[in-house]
Length: 213
Image (cartoon, rainbow, N blue to C red; front, side):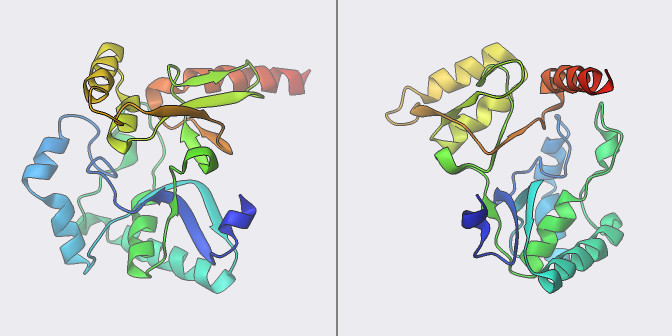
């Protein structure tokens, strides 16, 4: 992974283009944002032509000045939050802390710094933990993640209602190549979905008890 990052002065894992949920409402409220074109208006207001999706679980910083430029620019955007469509993360159920991923994404777009591909098959830096997509032992020493090669199909992994998830994957898989999948072991396992955090809490508690004893 370090060899793969070495050409970069600074990068964050992510996608070249952010979805509408990035920094926005996670529920039905997203429809309002789409209809009012709030994402587009934010980009136009700040003179940006695109918004990457950064996933700050993995940040690589090799050059001090470049890193400082990104952080300073991200702080400037964060101070202008009232002029954007981005929501406070604490407004989401179960969240108590703020997130500045959207400001880092805007800073990287402003400074023309590329994100590192989040989804890259066997070389994926990190993948989401989804109980129905992840095979692992209790201590997460051996981990394999179900990885659909089609991005749209793989995006169905986050559906909290299992039968809808299975139905949508099955529907898309009717088309040749859409249902292709493999099992990969990422460098990092990301517990980002709120409804999928329980195994992480149980693991953390068990490790804490072992250390405490």
